[in-house]
Length: 159
Image 1 (cartoon, rainbow, N blue to C red):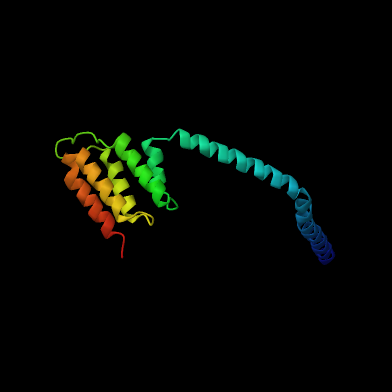
Image 2 (cartoon, rainbow, N blue to C red):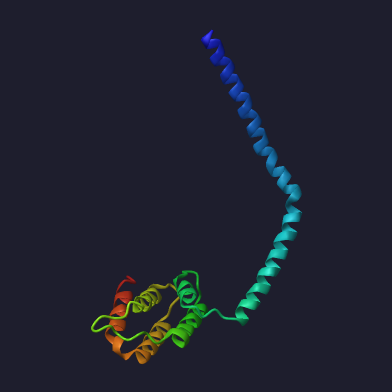
């Protein structure tokens, strides 16, 4: 009696599995019929994204956190990187004074930026040198720390 129950249960499970597999292969054909609607929807989304990009370009985000995220993005191209670095120098270039012999805690962000641009695949020597010189010009008391961060970043590139 137990073997009969096990056989019926296995057959039942095979039938349920067959129905589920049938539904799995039936589903893509429904997607093909609704695909034109999705294409129209994606075209509308693309147009709205283009409009939002135009609005974003007219009002540049100069938030330090946003600019650091642009620099940390490995897909950022040279133009985007240089623009972000220029905005950092323009809007956030001056670091708070040192706390005795120690750098201000906000300077860690600038060390991170220096290290990141040295390791970024799309950064070139001109970008790094320009940012280095401008940061040193605006913050002469941090010159030693800036040079150390640049050296560590360039040494970690691994040529």
